Image 1: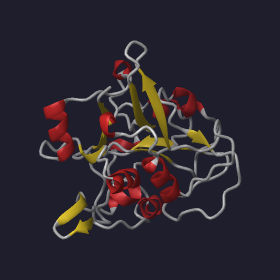
Image 2: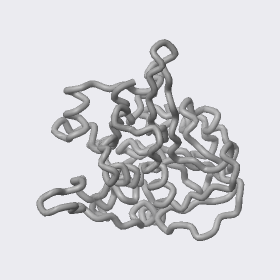
Image 3: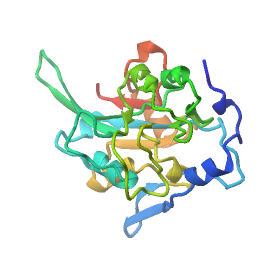
Length: 252
């Protein structure tokens, strides 16, 4: 299994480090006196290497995810400057909402699907240049500087979580560089995480009051996400593939 870059903490070069840390994120948001919208993980110091001591992940409560709500998608698009071109089949989608319907009962579930940040990511295995890589903390990324746009990773991803950039791009976000002819996907808002924040999708969901997304350290037994997974259990999509996604779904 190819995991060269994730096995060398500190291997992130200075340019990439600036990219990964380029965004700013507040540590907490107070929505009312004494009420915090979320609690942030600790920020990583600039000279502190990414470590496998943590593994970032998401828990998604599908029972709380409203079918017609797109707050997480909208939050992601705004954070990373993703714009549609009227071609939903090929427009960049770092998060997409899907609807599951039980054919027997007719029960419907709506849930967001993004890069699953697998422990054993097939996209990394097939990348011929090493552009697809996994950080030591479990975040799967694409190095735009060496991506040649072959799209092998898109074919290998069982979650259809990656997009190809067909158009020239303007007004890019400094913390989220993109490029025509390259592949991209959810970064878990790594620029926010490295600054001690949480992904934009989680923050957007929190603002709706749905509380459908929980972000945290899967390696920390005392984190909220680990506690909920231990108490309630959850499902990983296509866990039969052995990719061990970092994204869990409760209620499917």
